[in-house]
Each structure stands twice: as C-alpha cells, then as structure tokens.
Amino acid sequence: MIQVKSSKLIDMALLRSLLGSGRYHEAVAELVSLLDQQAVSRDALALLKEAFNKYRCFSEITDVILAWLETHQASFVLLELLVDGYAHLGEMSAARVTFSKLLEKISTPSQVSTAIKHVPALFQVTARYAVYQELLTLLNCEAMQQQPIVAVLEARILLMLAMGNIQQFNILINRARISGITSVKLKKLYAMEECLRTFNVLGSTSQKVFGIGLSKTGTTTLHEALSQLGLQSAHWTNSMTGQLLGDDDIPLFDALSDTSISYRFEELYYAFPSAYFIYTHRSFSGWEKSLLKHFSGFKWGAGMQTFDELKRHHQELTDFRYGDEWKNIHDRLYFNHASLADAYKSFDQRVRSFFADKPNAHFLALDIVAGQGWSELCPFLNKPIPEKPFPWKYKSLQVYTT
Image 1 (cartoon, rainbow, N blue to C red):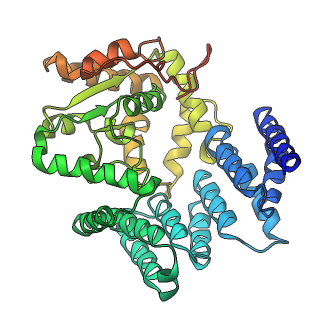
Image 2 (cartoon, one colour; image 1 turned 180 degrees about the vertical axis):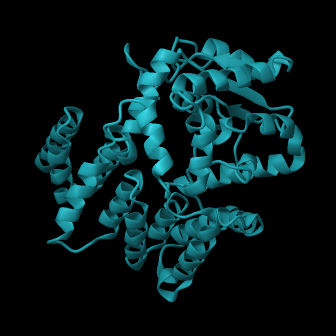
C-alpha cells in the first residue's frame, strides 16, 4: 500500500512538473489515461482541473479528450471536461452539443449538481429555465430517489437557487437544518441562506462590500482577503450556480467583486447607500500586459498581441461564453473604447469622479499590486488585522496576473 501511494505521488509530481514547464499535451495525455485507473483517477482529475484554471491549456485538453474518445467510451467526467474546454475556447455550439450528451450520462444527483453550474456559460438567460427543468426531471426520476439523501437534497436546493425559486430554496434549506443534514456544499448553502435572512431584515441598508476594480487589478486577491476576514464572498460568478453575479446574488453574499459587479457600481451605490466600495487599481503598464495575457488565453484571443486585434476579432463574434451578459460587460468596460489606455483612463476617472463627493468612510482605493493589504483594508471594514499574511495571488516581480 505504501509503495503504491509513493508511486502515485511521484507520478503526480512529474505531471505537475510537465505542466509547469509548458509540456501541456504530454501531461494532459497521461492524465486522461489515468482517469480509468481508480487508484489515481481523483488526483488526475484534480490536476486536469488545475490545468484548466492555472495553465489554461484548453486546446490541449480538448484535443487529447477527443482523441481518447475515438477508442474509448465517453464518461461523464470526460464529457464535462470537454464541455468546459469547448466553452473556454469559444466553440459554444460544440459545447452545447457535448452538454446534451453529458445529460444522457447523468445517473447520480451529484452529476446533476455538476451540470447545473455549466448551464449559465452555455445558454442565454432566456434559454436556461428549460435546461433547469430538464435537470429537475432527471432528479425526480425513481432511480435518483434511491441515491444518498444528502446528494439529492443538495442538487434540489441548487436547482431552486439557479431557477430563482427562493421560496422553495428556503423551504428545502430549513428542512435540511431541522433534519441535521450537513455537508461541505450544504454549509455553503446554509451561509447563503443566513445572508439572505439578514438581507430580508436590512434591505437597502445592508452593509454589503463591493469590489469594483477592473480585471487583473487584484480582484481575486481581494476576494480571498474578504473571505479570510469572515465575509461570505463571491467573485465573478456565484460558485454554487455558475451564474454571473447579478441582482439575485446580492442578498446571498456579504461581499461581491469583479467586473460582473464593477461595471455597474453607480447603480449599486444608490441601491445600497450603506455599502462599502473597494476600488482595486494598479499602474496602467502592468495592467495592460496582464490583461492582454489574460485575453490571449482564450481561443478567440490566441496569438493576438494588441488590443486592436482583440477588439476587431471580438466584434466579429456572435456567440459568447455566458452569452450577451459577458459581451455587455466587456463591451462597456473595454471594447467600446478606442484603446486599452482609453478604457483604463475612462474607468478610473469614472470611479474617482463619482466617489469624489461621497463619504470617504465608504470608499477605498486599494493598490494590492504595490503592496497594500491588511493595513489599509481592515481599518476600512472595521475588522481586526488577521495573523495570517495577506493572500496575494499569482504575484511576481514582472507582472501581477490576477
């Protein structure tokens, strides 16, 4: 047993090293082959997801899985990775076709929960309800009722949340609490319900925290810091439903950040006058490099070195991951401007001029890249400074990339 475990650890370390050195295709091919081996499949899947999120090797993963499926039976795990790969590459039609095949493979409530989170990235808002109904039908079938009650309940609560049925969401949450049922996912859902109860009492006087910086200004770091301060924090999407942060999510969290929030900060200020607004910013030169690198990680931006190239190609696209929601946010913040310099300057002036005559106690400009952290953030939020160091993410001397 010890020898097998040691071998597994060495394999994973080697594969992680291959990813780190840019040998993506070689590493991914080995990882996909390991998914069939029960002893290492969980580790292999975790590393594949890291390859998506950290190394962004979407093309390599998609190519390897397609080749693998030519001689092997499609599994739920591989189809899910393929859906995610196609979506990140901007091949939305292929992603939706693969998602339909994924639905046919669903046999457990946990797989229903997984499928729920893919819906917002693949379908326009107007088309999502029908997909959620299809998932609800799958969840209600007799075979599902023989599955573990915790997993069934989790999936049902997530569906109610995704469908905006807050009444049923509350009923199911209360039923789970009374029954003493708990899990990692349910604990997160309980925390959301507690935020919702507080919001129902305080309404517009709720002291929400909104992170209103542009992409690549330290928004991920801010989200992590707010979480460490004990706030129920969300970044870009609702991690439970996969939906871009919107009006329905504000009651569910203490803090919300990234461009799905920042593009509409004026509206949020008037809706929540007691809220705290944190403007993450950085120097233009570093921000420009990081943002261009970010966009080049997607197929529609691959190989493009300038904003003009990105903008021209963006304007030619008609089908986006997260649909019109994504397009509207990015058009307003970036692509409606003549250059990234104009976009940066316009947003910076927009923020600073808007808050110029607002109470200082509710606005903080935070330069995380320059080293600002707990000493600025904690007094602003009336929080004690934690013993843990400030959670800078992906920081380097050249380019701060989050």
